[in-house]
Amino acid sequence: MPTRLLLVAALASIAFPLTAQAEERGLFVGLKLLGGTAFGSSSTTDGGAPWAGGGIVSDVRFGETVGIDGRFGYRFDRAMSAFISYQHIRGDIRWNANFPLFGVSSRFAGSAISNAILGNVSRELHLSDTTAVIATAGLGITFNALSGVTETDRATGIFLADVEDHTRLGPIAQIGIGLRHRITSNAVLVLDGSIAYTSGFETGNTRHGNLGITGITPYKIDDVWRANIGASIRYEL
Image (cartoon, rainbow, N blue to C red; front, side, top):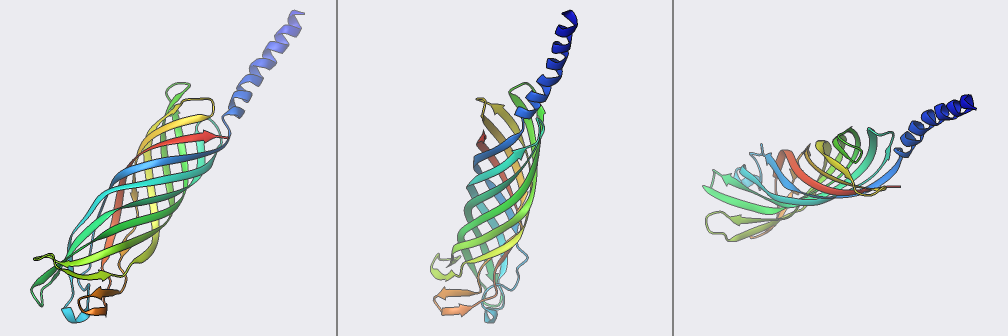
């Protein structure tokens, strides 16, 4: 009898961690709310209508950004998971363009919108049974659009033109770190911060305004970085 009990106990001690590990595996979905800012610059020195002598871009500024991040993934074990995510982030943007040939300057303002698809991996360092530090890294593609860009005279504020919208495709790379806390058996709360390289933006090649419809050399915003703080709920299926 004691031998049988010992055998049962041994089998149970082996089976329990395997069961616990299996419960850590599975599919999950999540939705994250994002808030942050962006930074970028421009190397454009010939923007605008060619006859104007070339607009030299300066003082590129982004406003605060807001967005959402939806994800679907698989948890391999207690520490590792992989997921596909879709991000939609938008915020204001403005810049100046100087035209030395005529001694004038224009101000441009509009919206900078990014729609990105990323493949991600994450690793968790558990602090307790319910709380862990989580690190993520992701790569993908982003569709960056400048929308609703308006050109005004910098000195007087007089409207000059609406600049054509344009979407530019580029790579995106992102890393993040945060804190994960299990609030129910299936629901997890994550608070984290991330930084991402999101390529650049570019206007269209026409303007519509005080000179009618005019072809222009596009204005480009280069090497844009985004910093975000996010809060998400993840549901494990």
